[in-house]
Image (cartoon, rainbow, N blue to C red):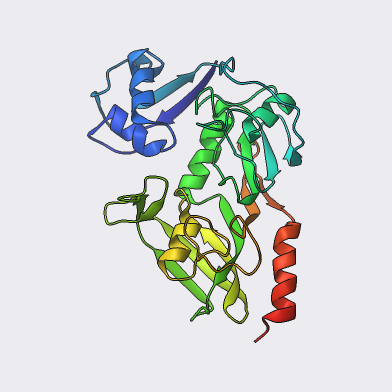
Length: 304
């Protein structure tokens, strides 16, 4: 059992609303259930969902150890970049699903880390132990795994406050007009295709910073930095401005001279403050071979 304590900084708000804004990866229903079960205390005492809080109040959140009976640990090879008693940083290969879902109940990153790592945070429930943030199945690169709830909350807050930095590289269609650009457009579920996300007026705020690394004929090699972490954010934003990620099966163009069946997108850099020591640590993942092959072809055949 782990306890997390938090001092309220905003006044005149419902407890469940306040916690929902603070911990965006925990569903409102999960928060309400924790309050109902007495696992969230206000100034040391059980309370109710609609209780009004005030500045200086102390909130205590009690997380039970995760129960993993629904999942099977699997001996799957993992590229572990870093590991200590608090967290692990994984370089996920392209094609690996992060956590079990419909149609993917095995062979996921969660199945693999359960085999290698015995202690994982339980904040996201039994099917997503340790998962602080995700990468799409066909996006390769770095993500961090939390080994306990305290580390999970600390890392999650760093991502939300942009203390943690995530940097991607991608190959996109077209000719970019500027060396640098910021895409700020809200993202939500597509109106007619529920498998897709889209820029929609009532979506969640999303901001992506793009930097041109090299321009080729009809294609560009770019770096993307995230201020937010919406589902498919880079892919949606690049398609929105007319420069979809090459090979993207959902948002990309049909023209695909590189023979890809997935998007050319790689989470290359990750940095954050260690939840125990406060030391800033940085990691880089080598660009995978499929990506290097495209760059080689661009250098050979698409020079301007």
